[in-house]
Length: 229
Image (spheres, rainbow, N blue to C red):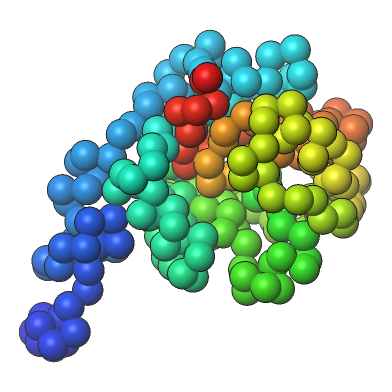
């Protein structure tokens, strides 16, 4: 009753559509959860996300949970997560992603690593939006996650408005593994919010695969449609 009274005075809004959340709705309203564009890629080894890495870097599995389109409700969620400190959205969607991956080859992973931010960018934003996604995924899959094994010692220019080739060259060699012994022989799930060309994830995977016996799978919340242009 107290919760209902507080919600009446200060209503909690769905970050995707702006409607008031009702009882038993958590973070995202039921209507948006139903309408968010799921890809179902996890059921197919040969899917559009996996193809982004063919001939570039070997990954065990690759998938994205949703399709990303500008102006969509899903873009609102990513914007709130990335720029308004709504880390609760990241954790919730990470848990949803984990539920999707349960029972798939991703279950064989040993550790989950989020794509890191350079310390300067992290300090400016206050957090890495991939951390809560990894945390939620870890909770669902019961696989530990770590935010410091993969680091970004070099800062790069923004990927926005860059061509496919420019994106790949912009992030080439900018990631490093801090403690290689911690990843020796481990199957790593690499986590990001949205994959477009795959350039950033490729650079991360390349760094991880430099560790003896390491293998990589890639799981992102979404894939941008322009990745297929």
